Length: 605
Image 1: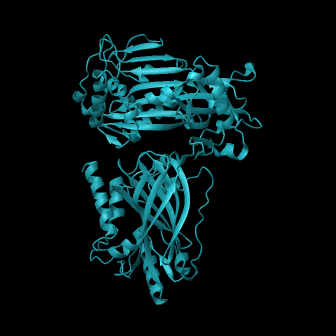
Image 2: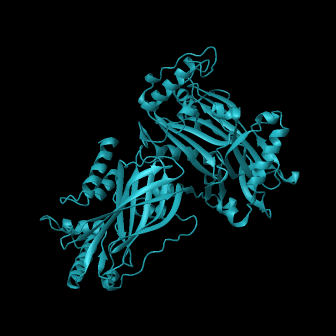
């Protein structure tokens, strides 16, 4: 069964479940587990819960320690640790919004966005002491017990769960109470106030807590409704239903509730111990219309630490076989190595490049042709058009591609904990051909200049084995939106492994050195930009500008004491457009030392 068919199964399961299909009301959970190739861990309803039916009043807390994603913890525990680790590095938003739905209060506690997937965790509690909440898996177990071939051995883990559930049913009925199941999932999702769309792939799973509440989770993902954005609008649908003694829904008791939340998930980066604890960035839209992005640490204290900058040297201890095992044709032991299959590895202290070629004079290989067209995404009329849609291609998965890239980062002596995968793009055959056609047409139409000896490339002839994932890694504390690209690790990984690597990293972030008493404000940085433009060679011609975004980030500069070498200092990155940039559709940047206001670098220099 292919991925498309699997997604259709999940979607049909959700539709059927929400339509109150009597044959199997819990098909969603079954299909979701099957689609993932694993079974979720089931938490047993304890005897304490049976004995505390009359006292179910408490609600689970929704305030969490900074850096501890409840979504990541839940999915890591109940699906697998690797998924939990991936979600810990996603964009996180703590919500805390609730609705009252009859006898229950439903709260959406937290969501995480990662790789075109939206993951959520919430809490359901009863407001009526005679109401008992039952997880969907337990209700399903009661339902399945009606089958003639149903049997549980004494050693089966589900036996305890079944006996506890039956005790709940008996006790609740005798006391005149009722048992409810509650399902809360996204009905529609909007991105940056765009059209609200229904996700194609969605799943649900919930567990019982000791205090009688439920913790529920959902996953919504596809290439249409869920994609990269700043704000997310989620229309939730909550279905509350009474369950009878046989585990089946009681006719006429189903109630639906719809509620909408809006949130702005942000990265909560986890760095190595040497760089200290980081805090999540908060983005606000100022009254002047530009986006201001600052860490919570700065909002609380008005300052941020200075870190040691340790010089990178990619030329040390790099083994050619890490990139290519065909053997070295020439250049062994130098900074320019050609392999027997004509691939080339070149390096300098601050940069390393690995490219495949077909032969003399280094004619372009498929991997080079594919990576050459990636930057189409930066063109004005194609921005936001190409995003991650698939996590599995011919012979390689996104998970495996990241693993290979991150293993290489560690081999090269960089601290993986300081980096985040800022961008991932699936280059399927269809996408390669689409983007290739756009690229070639731009050259033919004269919109893109190239060398005189340029010849058209036949992207339609690229085989499926060349499909792969284009990955971009960036230091978590350094803003990734400027145009310098001095701290950027780019990989293209397909079924043959890493076939393209362009790595630039002049300095690594070391231990904290000191913390200044305060930093200049972002308004002062913008004022300094105005002064610097006026004194630049462009003068007043570039004076009329529009500020797009101001980010408090880090950049490497000479330490205040020259004997100390280099430091990473808090830096205001001001992204703007002058008239020419606005007409041609590109952004300009300027970097100001947030300690003394000095200009570090800018587009106009």
